[in-house]
Length: 494
Image (cartoon, rainbow, N blue to C red; front, side, top):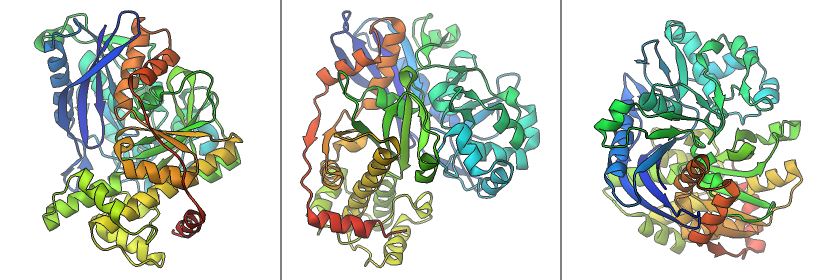
């Protein structure tokens, strides 16, 4: 059984073919296509190049279809980052631009929304961590500044649903990606009529919510033929939010409950898997979000800035200093740098989309009374240690709000390959860290397709399969008094 996972992040996308053994006992994966992504500046705004993204999607399908190993391509699933969306007109045409969440256009929309729905009430409905990038604030800006665009649209589609629409011509709202919008009722798991009406957003634009693995649509036959794919190729709605797919591939087995995941990439998502949303005052105060998961679960988590900070620093080192160092070199330099010299708060708003990430880092350090780090190694060490302590802050919040203990942390995604960050995370959090798989998002995407096609009985079987085929690296906690003192200093950073 051969499936294709198209996993698109904020900086790149890839097509990964998965071939499942007929008896479900094995899975072989291989990357067949990779393409770049990133927002572009257009008329002073940060927008996504949807045409380039769609070319990446179709070329991934073409490459997977041309790969003869494993038999004919049966299905494709798409996952992306959350919150962003596009409008589609009555004829299926794209209306306007697809804005990036890193654009600053919601600055005025946040207070505008909260005048109509106080934050505490909004949380009681959607259960979503307050972030200015959330879809509810983006569409509020549309209502305020481009009402004619909103009124002329047929659908508002979240990014993976928009790409799926372009492949199939069928509109739907996959649950896990819809749950990132702060427009979904966390209890009913459907769009909130109240939120839509109070911000003046037409409820008619929002398609029916469908659960991951329970909905599929045929790829347009003429497009399938053009790409050399079978004419009965189907698009399966997987956990279309990349974190939902990543969590579906966390290699836990049996009845294990006291574990936390960190989906580590451009963003770091630190959370627990629950079966009902937590909408308490304590959850609101701790700024945790209730996002949809695969298999009827809730991803109760907090967003931490993640590797975005070091990715931007690396870009500046390359473009402004001519220091084009690879990740192993940067990590090696950080490992050799003195520990606990300076900290930043990765969750600070100043790191969301600064003009110069180095300046933002130096300013955050200086404001906290630290001497800004000098050089690649000390700077990278500052970022990695601060991320590890930010993870601990989120882990402690999860334990406090849910009342559940924490015995293991599973780090999945690209950040699981960062040996230093994983070691620092175990040290900071005081629990064992299991690192890997790095390609958890693609694996979870493939698992949901296999369940939908009948090749696996459920997600639990998929996790067991991942555990058998992807052996994690284990990091034991080795912290001490010095770590506790450093964490106390970190908590003082604004």
